[in-house]
Amino acid sequence: MVQAMLADMATEIYATRMMVLNAAWETDQGLDPRAKVSMVKYYSSEALGRVVDKAVQIFGGMGYCSDMPIERLYRDARVYRIFDGTSDIHRVVVARGLLKGPLDI
Image (cartoon, one colour):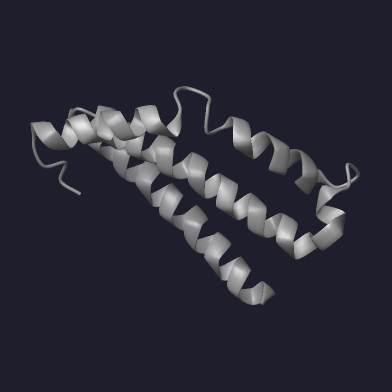
């Protein structure tokens, strides 16, 4: 169902945006941003993969055609899980932050 995929995509994008704004606000308040920033980087790169995957699904076979912008986004989405540390590295940073104390989630 395309409508359900669009709703899922919009929810992922909204959740990511709220995480970014919260991490930025906490940084402005002088709090240690490392764990939250790693959460944002990890979640947003994984969410991007899910959103783009759904977009390709919506476009069907045309999603793989190089004439469509979604094809490029689909290829690029994978590399965002590697840039600035892999998802696993960010998970380690988050876990270390949790071991130091609550992250006020």
